[in-house]
Amino acid sequence: MAQDTEKKRYTKEELEEFKELILDKLENAKADYELYKNALNHSDTNDIADTSPTFKVLEEGAAVLSKEEAGRLAQRQLKFIQHLQAALVRIENGTYGICRETGKLISKERLRAVPHATLSIEAKNNQK
Image (cartoon, rainbow, N blue to C red; front, side):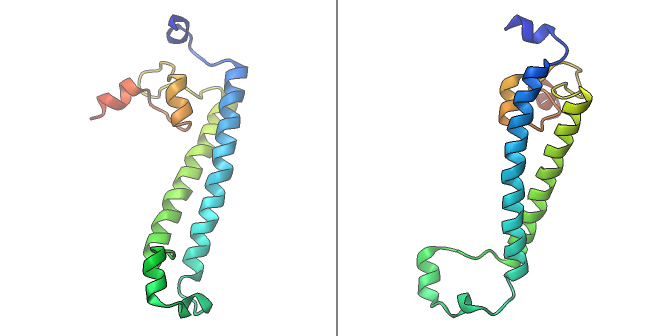
């Protein structure tokens, strides 16, 4: 493990692993974004869903997002997509996985959990 703390950059193979992880998360994030966007676009229409009895809605839980909630979730998802796309750019230009505060390599564990991270745990804790 001492080797990870001494090296300055991840290898091409390691970067490829992270790229696959990011592309997978990006695909899922875009699908979720489309769901939120569709919920937002259809939240004020009068379709057959409006005729369902109130007790059924209460029984099944809040099946339909309010327009405000859908908008907030869509905006948050879009920001996540932008962070993932920026991480792909960092992979391409060779700066991925390098903490923007300390210049040290961000741990693989952190990048697997938060693949768009730009701060190491150390730098993140120092922000508090």
